[in-house]
Length: 147
Image 1 (cartoon, rainbow, N blue to C red):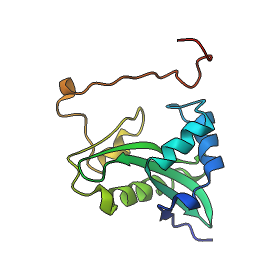
Image 2: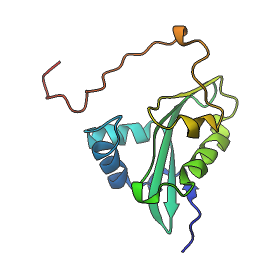
Image 3: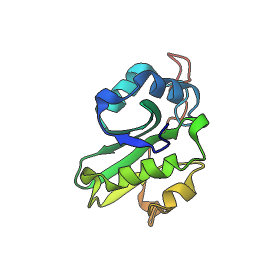
């Protein structure tokens, strides 16, 4: 058994069932996300799958124009595989990818993984007063038809 995480950026290799199940059921940031939304997100992103012995155990995606901006999203390692350095391997592959070099801004949002991302050069925004967002954190769990 090889315990080295293999990274692949092929969308065809992704275990979309596992990705959707994790995001919809376990991820604090998008609980209840519909499968169709995950599919659209995958198709519109540069995706990174992490594999052990042919099984996908990690995922990350970057929304980018490949020139000036990138947004890192949906980074996870399945719970049974955490604490083994796989998140660092996954992030190293993301940061080394040729399409993500020379970006003026590379951003992300996290509640609990600041130390991981700081190890790859991410910091709090230099000018938070210049950043804005339109956030609807309950969009996937709110009853249909309710604002």
